[in-house]
Amino acid sequence: MSIAKILWIVSFLAAVGFSFISGFEYAAALLAVLGLVSGWFVDAEHRSGLIIAAVFLLMAGGAGAWGAIPAVGEYLTAIFGNYAAVVAAASLTAILKTTYERLKP
Image 1 (tube, rainbow, N blue to C red):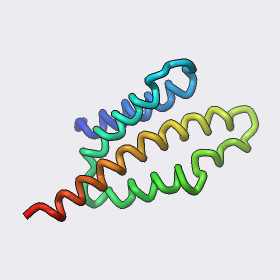
Image 2 (cartoon, rainbow, N blue to C red):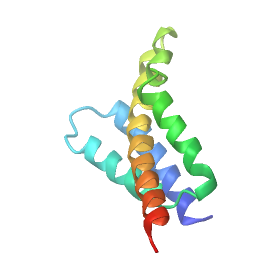
Image 3 (cartoon, rainbow, N blue to C red):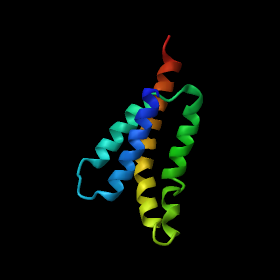
């Protein structure tokens, strides 16, 4: 298993874990760092998909769409809200990496 897969698994598990743990003040920072590091390992052909996923989860309300499901909707919304933070940070790294690759001589 590659380091990229391990990082994405750890990131998703952290997003799930922090959905059920309240009061941990560094949860958002940890999710952002995991996302930034995970974004470094995204292949060039997968970067646009990552950016589209980030836009969907954050801007289009994809993370909040689960709220209507009785009994589990609020938990799914929290999980995907946390995962949206990871994906957003990863897409930022992917954008910066793509920009660097295009600008380097």
